Image (cartoon, rainbow, N blue to C red; front, side, top):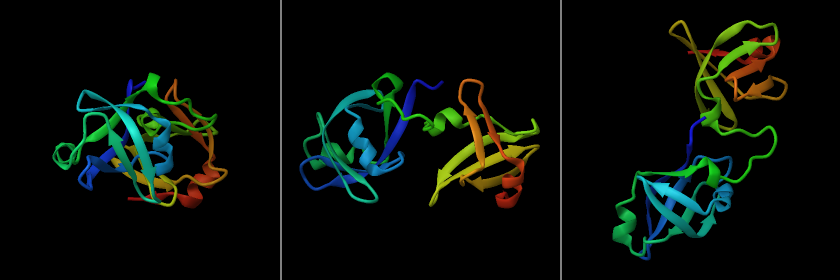
Amino acid sequence: MVDKITIAQILKPQGIRGEIKVKCLLDTPLDIKKYKDIEIDENNYQILAARTDTTAAYLHLTGVYDRDSAERLRGKYIKVTRENAPPLEEGVYYIVDILGSDLYTENGENIGKIIDIYTASTDVYVIEQDKKRFSFPKVDGLILNIDIVDKKVTVRADRLKEIMLVE
């Protein structure tokens, strides 16, 4: 498993007192409030204050007290070590732990490798097999099991055929 997890990308400074606006790579921007100790370019920071709206989070970090220091962070990624991440609820996974998994049907047919997961109105999985790509949205009744240790995701074949999009 990956030791560091990317949780957000810094978009821009917000105001003149060092606050930054970030795009959260979590289920909701509100989830960023669960994190305290973060890393940006191998430098450690603490989140002193966080507020959110429906699309972004706004953070005050240790050592970032003016617009100039916030500007230097623009475009960078915020990471956390796995040990500093809050425990996940059962059945919830970090995308980085699913990437690279093999996708199988419940009958044992290998469909391909999960190479990307992006969020639209739901998570969309991108699969590659023999240089062909296809994707599918995560919908109810599709995924039967996710095994992050063995890097194996099992889906219902009939449900997958209903929603699969060939790229």
